Length: 416
Ligand code: EPZ
Image (cartoon, rainbow, N blue to C red; front, top):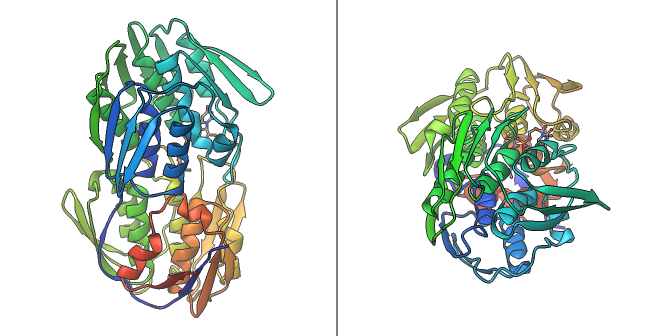
């Protein structure tokens, strides 16, 4: 199994170009089945999850080509309504095909995505909303059998601003008769990107990025070209790499507006951050300050996908920090691995108390999930000696050659 070997102690200096957003390209690739035409997607990251999405599209009859960061999909030849179970198991976010396939075909069979490393991933909000739009969904033997003869727009009040549920509702509503209003919608930038992709193909959506999204159903869709927004979590991860090594890096091709909550917490930790709209310079302190409290929240709050990375930084801070993970039930699996590197962290339910230590030491550690794995790399960059990070397939799901980006900034990290 591949692993990363990291020699700690190098300050990161230089410039990095940030890749396209994983959590934007995944729903948009699912949405390419809706227009029954071609979609040319630019600035797609090269990730395992993108490979899986392409495999699903091919398995239902679509034509898919990828050249570097451009993905070309022709969904005209789509001829199956059953999403292969083994691919859904590989990536639970393939549940996003539910809305796209109901919009295109009026039916879909997909296995229950089940939980993943960070906890149970229920889809009750998805199912309740799609049923309200007119879908008949039977759940049996671990499969969802969905049919929607006549989708009708309606008003939906989400109990929780779920990203995936908001995306699935948007994708069904573009073909529903009449207007759909989604209230308490997720406000993430990736929702805005999905709105922009769908509108470019002929949909009529407004309000994405706010808590109220309105969708007027339409019948005709056309071919579309779309450029994926930059990945705010990759940008945040690289910022922490600079902060934890006392480095000085410049990030290009970012949307600074999307990472304001991350910038604010890194400034509290003692970083100097200078930015314009699409690039940023971050200078890390000799030793980070503790941050009194970080609470993960739906956007524009502090992102849960940056919790593990911040914990690595705060494990060497001068003082005690508190992180509360309010989004997922089981997103502290990186703690036991950081403890092996000398961190002093105590968790009670969904709260972690991080007492900063002056030094981490290199150790053999294991990635248990995507962002937890990234936090172990960050800890290895500053740990004394050699760190070996195993199970890096988790990391490859969401980072496009992270080690190459870090090497270009001066990190001593090798994939073997
Ligand atoms: C998306 O997951 C992202 N994934 C996640 O990124 C991200 O952490 C999450 O949004 C929150 O920002 C993609 O976009 C592919 P949710 P999603 O529905 O849509 C509960 C990463 O590391 N919930 O907003 O699954 C759910 O259990 C990944 O890149 C229900 O209870 O997130 C969770 O506690 C990890 N019922 C909370 O809402 C539902 O029907 C947030 O889930 C749906 C969700």
